[in-house]
Image 1 (cartoon, one colour):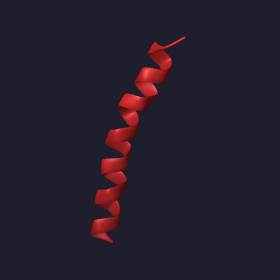
Image 2 (cartoon, one colour; image 1 turned 60 degrees about the vertical axis):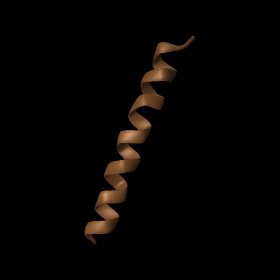
Image 3 (cartoon, rainbow, N blue to C red; image 1 turned 90 degrees about the vertical axis):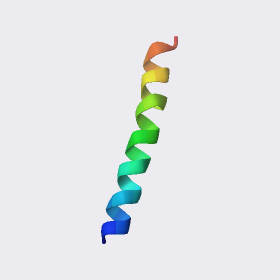
Image 4 (cartoon, rainbow, N blue to C red; image 1 turned 135 degrees about the horizontal axis):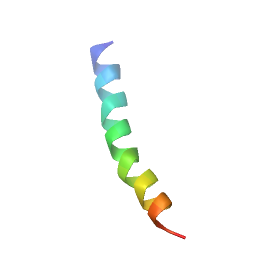
Length: 26
């Protein structure tokens, strides 16, 4: 359970820059 939550947290941190890049784009 803890491992799954940790993976979700890492994925969230990885997707944040991607979302910011998309919003910063065209």
